[in-house]
Length: 97
Image 1 (cartoon, rainbow, N blue to C red):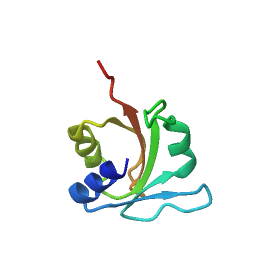
Image 2 (image 1 turned 90 degrees about the vertical axis):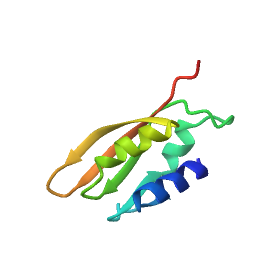
Image 3 (image 1 turned 120 degrees about the horizontal axis):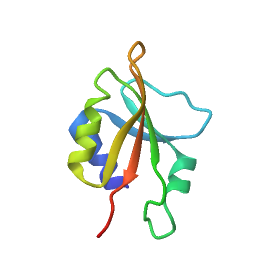
Image 4 (image 1 turned 45 degrees about the horizontal axis):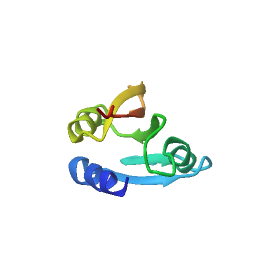
């Protein structure tokens, strides 16, 4: 996961962090709840559930293409607030053949 976070940092000029449920989402930073990381990956580091990412950034919809181009996840916009530029993205595991 750390390699993927570094990729997002490089490609989007957005900081990636993990947070707890009491932390507020910061502008220009992708936040991932620590409990989601624990729930979404098994002890073999295989993704078993969609991973939620929260961000407040006007260009947040562009992250969908950046994430999908990388190929580690399939990204979708779960929720987008056009007034506040807050986004909730879901990262799904890529099917392995």
